[in-house]
Length: 221
Image 1 (cartoon, helix red, strand yellow):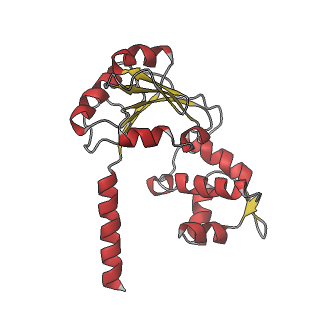
Image 2 (image 1 turned 120 degrees about the horizontal axis):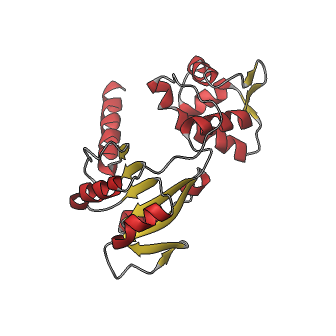
């Protein structure tokens, strides 16, 4: 298995699952404030931006050290560094994308990957007419050479944007060569990928969740 980035700093080992699910949101908002030139932020401001209570913010962030001062707020720079360590994004993750259809074409152009430590090295395609091209300076390569590339470049993560009927086979192929994690955008849930951590993202399901929230908000209003 390709190793994740080295992390020499301590990270809380007992982060509650509910808190862990909010870490990405905290990091995103803190980085946004940081880009705006702020150096500190109070819990009530951060809570208002995320729809969380002051007490919830304080409980969650207390797990990462004493970054807050009464009357001043939290040190944004220190918190950003601590959250990136906890999320494993304080180093570089070598990443590939498989599939250059409509969704894959959008993903390869997303600049947020590199900003958060995910270095997209190549795109792999079955369609020979796309192989050999460049998208946003990223080479499009034949999927026939994916095993050699992953091993030679110590690729840790793979993003799948392939048709549903191809996703399971591609995931199994990647698992055999030691990929560390898979982000699956194919509209099918992957199963039994040889113990490789896998996150399934189905955009239609997310829209269904949104529709459910809208309908139920209307019922209670």
